[in-house]
Length: 267
Image (cartoon, rainbow, N blue to C red):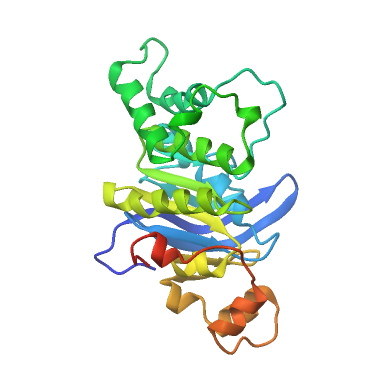
């Protein structure tokens, strides 16, 4: 658990989650600190994405409790921005980049309010941050995978939010897109926002402020140096002993850049 002085943006007690009839997350109790970057890491099928879905209010706990921003996830939908891992766009879909990013303003509009100059400015700023302004008139189906991911992250950033959820945001991206998105992730706490992301990448998890290690339940939670130990990784992944960081990196190969360099030394 967090220290007495550290506020929590997420609190779970004896949380159990199912996907259909399958037990995805067994009884888990944990907290996630506010104003920080939290990485959820674990092997395939460990419950990472299921937990993120629950935080977004898309899955109801089978038992136990889950609170985000001091209430159930379903009560804070407009303040929690969720960027999915993959969003398929059928060829010929007549929606532009600007229109897609603009959808990030919908949660705050309500039924009657029309978009204002401030809304349009927020969309423009999000596109500039994700380096997609020059793509604003192009259709999503015309973009590369990395470009589309930047568009959907821009949509999440354009939404008024206190928490940004991202499901494996850097997986399979070109270097330019990965660097751009990673920079945005590490700038969010500077604006008072909390970030929770899932990842398979040990280095990405090490660059976070806080880590949840999962393997069917939350096995460990805390700062990266305390959680990503040889013993914990062995238990979570069912591997032989990992003697040091270099050996762990070999077991979890990645094609990415230096997160510390990208984020100005943060992590």
